[in-house]
Image (cartoon, rainbow, N blue to C red):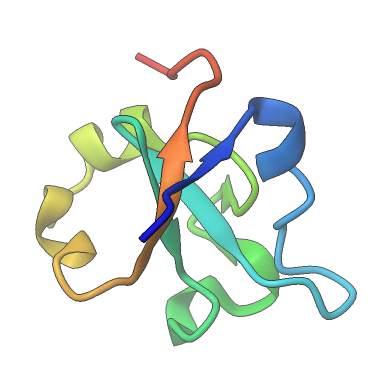
Length: 82
């Protein structure tokens, strides 16, 4: 199985808008949040799909537990938000 690699520019295309899937990066992994109702239209509590949301996950109440059941679609090679 080949792991897809996403740069920041590539990840930005997956913003959940105009029929595009919604992907987010967290600590080097890219997750598909397209089927998560809280990410409707690529937005969730001020966070946007197509971006690294590592910093937001660290500040959230649920932290990384919400990622456990999401499909990992690749790895993120852009600069992480810390």
